[in-house]
Image (cartoon, rainbow, N blue to C red; front, side, top):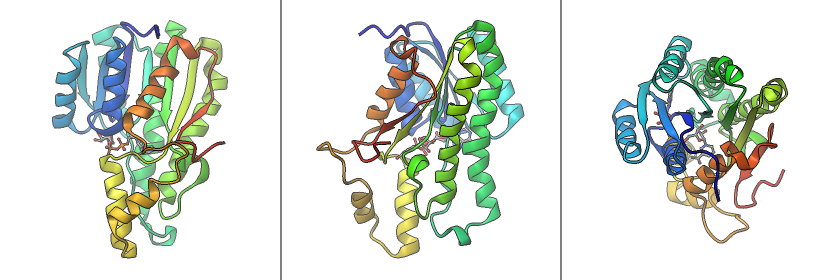
Amino acid sequence: MEMGLKDKIAIVTGGSIGLGRSIAIALAEEGVNIAIADINEAEGKKTVEELNKSVKAIFIKTDVSNSANVDTMVKAVITEFGRIDILINNAGIVGPQGPWSELSEESFDLVVGINFKGTFLCTKAVTPQMIKQQYGKIVNVSSCAGKSGEQFNGVYSTTKAAALNMAQSLSGELGEHNINVNAVCPAAMDTGLMEKVYRERSEFFGYDAEELRKSIQSGYKLPRNLTTLDASNVVVFLVSDRTNMMTGQGVNITGGIEVH
Ligand SMILES: NC(=O)c1ccc[n+]([C@@H]2O[C@H](COP(=O)([O-])OP(=O)(O)OC[C@H]3O[C@@H](n4cnc5c(N)ncnc54)[C@H](O)[C@@H]3O)[C@@H](O)[C@H]2O)c1
């Protein structure tokens, strides 16, 4: 199926490892040139090396929670590629796992700063260019936790609800400029982020980490676990010409666990 993505330009935040890396590779397979914006330079450069085998890719060291970093990154992408067609707001972290009343103000600020403010800053920075082009596709990586909440991971879940609502709110603002803003809401995939969840929550409550992983990755209506490729394929679809009339949506990729 022709996706209409060849030679498009995408920024993937948090694209050095995990889901972001998988999204970058899936986009490159459709001929999209990529800027990886991440704090992890060593892994980011490895991902860029891989991407450069098929498309043009660059790494720009960026802390998405820092507005000066984000503005510099966006200017560098425009200088290098001349336009920005796609923004994937993927960079994200989980904070300490445990009861809300025991979370520190510092951990709240860190999670909200990267997940919520980072998504705000990157979107704000690319929007003038997309309006000038009268074309753009933005995908916020939310989570099924952003729809239903998640106990002992409450601040993270709240930021994921914010990422979803930001897509809904902005779709109304940016639609007249031919800019689509959607969110994806995946369930648990095996990445470094989830390893931290299993490890820390098990330590806090005295669970077995592997048992916790199995219990979180269960209940799918389909007979296997979710992978980063499952989520990446949906992201590619959402930024393609095949979904031009989809905007303001929060698309579940949960094997049927989340249905609303
Ligand atoms: N893994 C899951 O099960 C799951 C489920 C639903 C949603 N998500 C979301 O997917 C996204 C990616 O998560 P992942 O599981 O791949 O995690 P990960 O830890 O494997 O990767 C996160 C990436 O974000 C980067 N990053 C962290 N802080 C940053 C900052 N300040 N500026 C720029 N980059 C930064 C990291 O360096 C890393 O490359 C997150 O937004 C997460 O909330 C993950």
